[in-house]
Image 1 (spheres, rainbow, N blue to C red):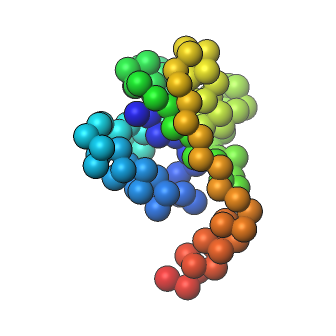
Image 2 (image 1 turned 60 degrees about the vertical axis):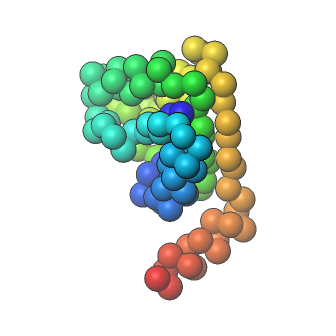
Length: 109
């Protein structure tokens, strides 16, 4: 399963997802395993998506890092690629209320 989201703001959610995938006996992959920043790295990400049975998208309140050439976020590019390849998509959409509470919780830690 390829796990995609913005990174810094959703570290806890990504870790929970990775753990759930591991607990189910599968192997997770995600952008944090590679450095984004150029086409070669994007090609590597696409190869990982190609080899994934499912693409998991975690949506929060940020757009994320933008790839210079397309002016799209890496998360969006990953999603569009998975769609173009017909890979099943599983999405988790975090509500505004959750994100507001998370900010308060993160600030208090």
